[in-house]
Image (tube, rainbow, N blue to C red; front, side, top):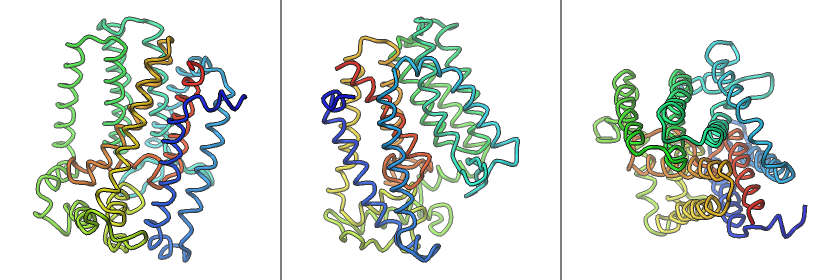
Length: 364
């Protein structure tokens, strides 16, 4: 592998590197109190995060040696595997319950989230299907298969429950369907069905409805349903424009729930301030920009859809996370890519980024 080829898009690599290194810096501070209280050392979560980064980086480099056609070959088997793994969580004792949801598979010493694999498999499967049929605008070969696979994955995710991940994969599928040449009227139908499904799920499950009401009025139950939203608002407000200083967050000392998970952006805003925290959404917008350029540069339809899907998934998840913890959207519980603690999420993100960069190198 030549160095010149490996540096095909320096800006893309710089953005990914900045998010990765920044994520480690942010997590190292956000995890101090939680790590010391639970494990007696301030380095527990940081060291595990470093291991996940190294694993992801090794996977990223390994992907560059594989032919991009490999992803076409495994698209269907990987989708079948994802469905099986999502089902195993629900129907076997391998499912591990944490925080009121069963989203993990426990296989001996290995814990991982199949939903992270499902995000990648959905992108590869839809890209393979649309490239194979090249009739995304038809009901039979475009709308119906997309709706069926989304329904299957959505049902399994809702039973965990994991509405946040379902929203991300639904958004990804919708964007891919549209880019593949899907009919505008069917795209609108997708949106309408999505709104109906979201409203139905909120009414069926009281806790989802509570998240919406706490989003609309967190002060109605500040110590209960609105607690996380309120504590996040306090953290962001306490940081002001310039922040309290690195390591100086008060809210991470046991007041803000999930300070290393979906609430980590609030800790960042408290320590670095609103203005400097805006570097994070800027970096994700840069990632989106490079992804759009990459998708436009590749003459291969399959590769174009893969880049579109992976970049959409990562960027959409980032803005859903930041929007929900900032009070602009209801809480979803999805992690902030590259930054939140979670080995499966981080390695899966590197897998997706590795595939995208492989396509960038092929097209350059």
